[in-house]
Amino acid sequence: MSKVYQFDFGNGPLAPGFIPVGAQSAYTPLKGYGFDDTAKVSCTDRGTADPLRSDFCIPDGTAFTVDLPDGQYHVQMITGDARAKTNMDVRANGMLQLYSFGAEAGGYNEKTFPIHISGGRLSIQALTARTAPRLNALVMTKTAYHVTDDKTTVFLAGDSTVSDYEPGYAPMAGWGQFLGGYFSDEIIIDNQAKRARSAKSFVDERSLDTILNRMKRGDYVLIQFGINDAGQDPARHTDPYTTFQEYLRTYIDKAREKGGRPVLVTSQSKRTYDETGVFYNSIGEYPNAMRQLGREMNVPVIDLNKKSIDYYNEIGVEATKNVFMFLEPGESPNYPDGIQDRVHFHEFGANQLARLVTEEISDLNMYPLKHSLKK
Image 1: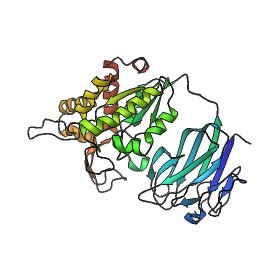
Image 2 (image 1 turned 45 degrees about the vertical axis):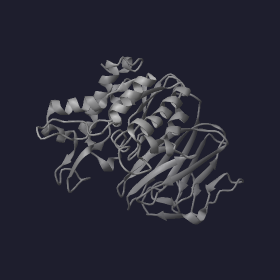
Image 3 (image 1 turned 30 degrees about the horizontal axis):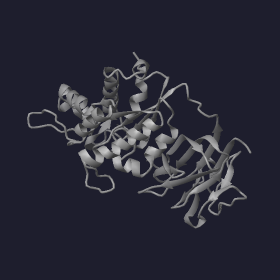
Image 4 (image 1 turned 60 degrees about the vertical axis):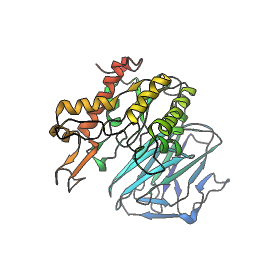
């Protein structure tokens, strides 16, 4: 069998070199690929000139399965629609492999993630809470094992303030988007942070398993939660000195079992200040609970909560509008009515928070990461 497997989804013209997948392409052991339940699949062709992107399938609650020889793979996905928005989670073999924040009508996402296949099968499921998922194409490439062993990977586990954002959300950004720019090419940043996650939900949905599946000895995982843990949603809520710390212990213990290096990151504060214009911590006891656990378990703690408050106070109330998502109507095509958001960052602010994280890495003498920081 070939080391490259290419699938073109939809009922339009077939892209050269790809295997066609339509609404009736049911999985069979003989064929070795297909949808688990074709009754839950529909396909559409928008009639554009690009055969790979013009058409797509909507698998509403079913998975696409491929039989593959065991080994390491890179999986490339193309998702999007010429006429409608797209927002998707992607679950591979039960684990969230990447989070696509979506694209506006006419926009497409192309993302690649690594995965190790054990058991001879890859099962891809597209999940969404707002719009039906679109699958345009899948390309699976078998690679050599440990192709990045000579490089250190820094995994990021966190929420929307850390995560990557698609162009349709610009200039909103998470600090994880900019972290790689502060390191030499010896360091790989694998940002697994996702919107609306807490220390609990990130584990429960198996996103931590995604990181552990990719982690090798000597890799890092930076862990930042707290904002969503404080809410009342039972799927996300934790208490600072009990369940929050218990979940963080899971991250620490599991990473150490893999030979990884866990690092705790206290959540940066929101844009909250008193009547005199002095900023203060707005994340409750979660930063302090993280500091306490770091001392207890001998884990480095990047105190981004304190660093962010000091930074906000240094630049002043008015200047923090450039840090957070404060836009006037008409200032950005993605936010035509403007926006005032005291939690999420403008690209400028996300870059500043990434800078603060790297300052802490240097101050804490975290080797070898410190040596890989750009001068």
